[in-house]
Length: 171
Image (cartoon, rainbow, N blue to C red; front, side):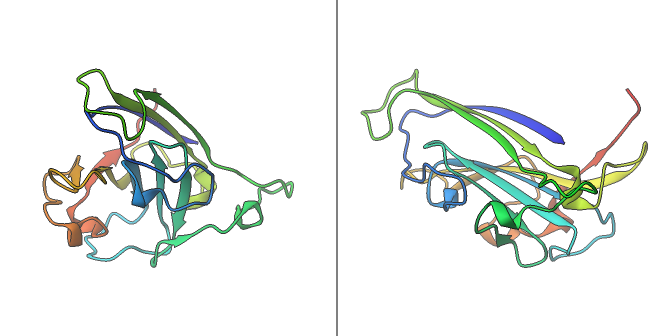
């Protein structure tokens, strides 16, 4: 699994997508993007995956060039023994959704993307395209913040040539 965790401090929490396979992009959410091809490409590939978790607890995995969302547990890729390789996630809120603004509110997200989603675990020294986006559904302020500084417009979010590289080492 590729594991990722983030803590978001946000005065007003907005969200309604509370189940797996929902549409967490409608909410305040965190998205993690991975793509195995290191070549500079402006579009996602077959080995591209995005996992998004909402402040309300909803989660979705989008795969491939078109970012197709999973429709249910039957869509998970199977391992060699035939068992599904499911994603892992957790969301912890500080504050209530829709409550008045507070300097103490926010949320934490933990995401686990199965390596099988991108063709298997990376090799030592392998580079992947990588980005993290915080989505803001409140209607005030920017609609997103990206780890990659090259992702400046909404249309850049799904452009791997603007994502960062991540290199895997033997730890």
